[in-house]
Image (cartoon, rainbow, N blue to C red):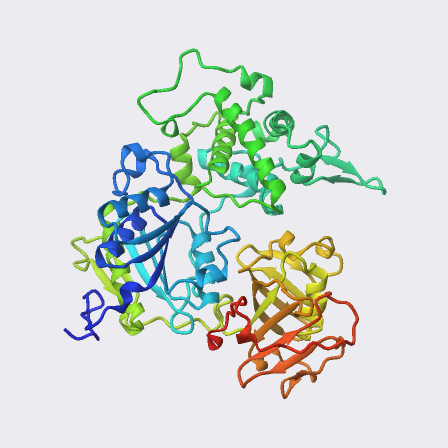
Length: 611
């Protein structure tokens, strides 16, 4: 059989199989993930790592065959590893019970692998892995199912389109006034609860305000309003008010479920044709036990609707947990697989539903709605996972042309085709914000020492010749440096790590005055000797040219603001390595001579040309 098979679903033979020693990362250990791990193992792959934040639920057991009843409540990644080893002890498999968004899993983590296989169920995580693989220049096989449908797609930088090249259908949205004022369905309460999570612990978004629409701004008895020097009444943000009351669960509860509801009742026109809500205080909620126990010991608690008293206790316990978590980070990201976050939304959604006389839902049902989950079909998962691992062989042999996007369709009288493919690879979208050909610079810096304002001055302005840079932490949308005066001043004297810039972070930097955009890959680097440079970077010289008249000429930077300690060395035709003194921004005429970068055993360069 020819290795250049015309049939994209036909396994090709090969005289040698060096691919089996390749290092593979599987992201997700759910329905598709279990199938992929099994396929990799029985195919002979020997070096596998798997990461998943989720724990095993009873509802998983009908299709995630690596798990048994005794595994319920345990880590999916860890149990999947144990199950794989039980029938193939020769495989080297490492498990991470963690979120792929965590800082440890940056670009440098992904660069350890030859191939990444996605088995995820949410768009945010897919976007993140897509960007990490592009930055690390590692091929990604993206897969997913929705009921009887499915898809497998190869993503390779410069060869195919990326996951974000084409706009995805917008998820269903609901009018803000319905969410804030007049919910009538369980989903309205669930969306409100997710908005509340973000207002209290996540990234605040004015479009996700959970407070009732304000008819009379002078009605303010809950402490959520303040008066300016000019006498104007200004609403505090939900986060500001929550911090002032130290996230006290009772005060939060009374604000959202009693005071805000009373305010809604004062807007009489809302309730002329609707059933009015009933305010609920903290004390009444805690004492509101059902006459007959609602708990069914034969069912998992996640599958049951609990009492309002128990949801109130759940609200209090999750607020205390999330309060501690957000204290260590700038913000939290809601994840259906994060237990405190999911419990918070479950409690808030059901309490609000009770107040508005809306039917309440189990945690399992709310998780499906909040996570936009479509029930999975075991056969669909198996088919898609099989194609994904088939593509793993082809990708590792660089047979990209034999990896068109594969679609799984539900077979019917109208469609006799089960698997269909695109005609050839889908080329990258030249206008894609994520993968279009923007210059890339690899910066090596001590993220635990350098301050944000030093990074802006020494690297962005003095070294890269930017005039008014804006820097966004990619994948999180956090603006860490802004050309708008005062917008990010609070970050200036913080260390890079304190604003989320850590080893493996990616910065999207834009200088609108010069129409100049860069992607900066950050690697943590520590100077070992006193005279070692404070930072280093590697890039193509052409990428560093300013869009104005002055730029890099013959490997030497010519800028209006050259600092005396800056040096640029042109080692070869492709790379420019820049250094500066280790006192970050100190004015010094002392020059440092750069040691050849390849002689530094402790510095791992991101650019393949150095390897």
